[in-house]
Length: 210
Image (cartoon, rainbow, N blue to C red; front, side):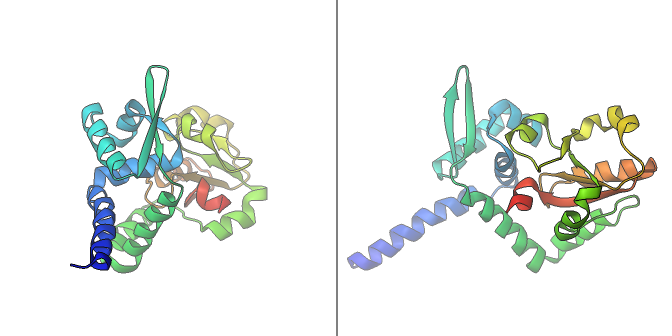
């Protein structure tokens, strides 16, 4: 094997390590969360519904593949995306799923067609946002990291507390973590069943500003 062939093999071997680290739904969920905001192991475990030990193990695999990085702040270790392009990588995987995997697309269509769920595209949401109420249904931690200008933070598990304060004379647009986050549909469904005019925006804050 000549030097050029060795070089090619080495480069593809390094890329294969990234591919191997992505071969887990749990690790993809963790990356999807870290796109929203840097987080501790405990926060990631809570949001991903994994044990702390399991979350830590997955993070070490992702770190070894250079997809996440960590820094120590006081008594906590904060994990973050190693590179902003990971956001593009996750979105590209979703694009391929929507284009090529029938079960993937069917699951999306089924979720979006449930009674009480009304969806809205990113383009249409931007057209009516000036006369609408925009709700960010993520956690306060994620909202504080960055959100759409004018959006108010009502975490999905606290919607009931805000029902009396929401307007019934204007559209409500709900967004969360993006296309694979079911929370927007759940919140929208609840609001529409309560008599509001609510729309589920299956795009993230980063999608909006991009």
